[in-house]
Length: 326
Image 1 (spheres, rainbow, N blue to C red):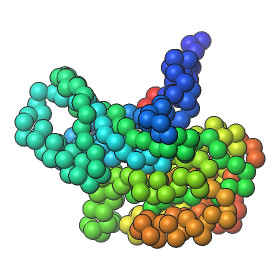
Image 2 (tube, helix red, strand yellow):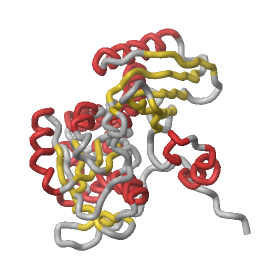
Image 3 (cartoon, rainbow, N blue to C red):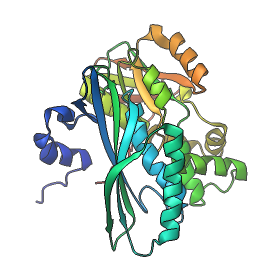
């Protein structure tokens, strides 16, 4: 009998985690930390996006560039880091001409101006495969203040920023799978898929308050599961408390099964964190000040795993463990 194939995280644990340097945090987090100038640490993060997997072949080149940069900045936000700069690697087929590259660079320039960062270097290669793009982002925090996945405590509340499910529903809208939605709602969701909103300002304000934090890229249940696994705790999510945009709520009204987009699908790039219950009032005020909703959706318990309950307390089965590449 053939051995079962390893999934994405099992591959990392078996083959790559043994290679991790001390700053690699045993590859149990989504960033690395290395010492910088006195009193500071650098936060290192790299993410790649691939045509047909993370963006559609016909997506505008400038928005592809912005998504590439923003998914990396979102990870810095999830540690409470301020961005410093980034390295860029592009693997492009020859069909992507100078017009495409010019639009791509305009998208990077817009976000560099918005987020106050610059390009530090990288590499450019040709490929016969799909467009493959990678950014290595660099941020900084005061030494010892980065908010990691570990640190969640029984009794904490579980919070999220913004609204959930928009990214996954946006991809469905772009693929023509939400025909009953109004045009404006489909456009809103598509924009959320193509252009994530890295919550950098909020992440930095959560330093010292959040016990554990990361961004939601693979799905709420899966990413909360990562926090729970590293923190050696469990969590319960109350589905009726999930923050939904009007467009997402409309889609779920037509098809209640689409609630799973907010629970299990990726591409939200909102912050997911735990904090003491007494911090809730402060967190709501910070969110209001920054114009970003902060919502308590559950709590941390002793034990293992993540459970989801409906308004009556009955369990909701979430089959998907989030997006995985293998």
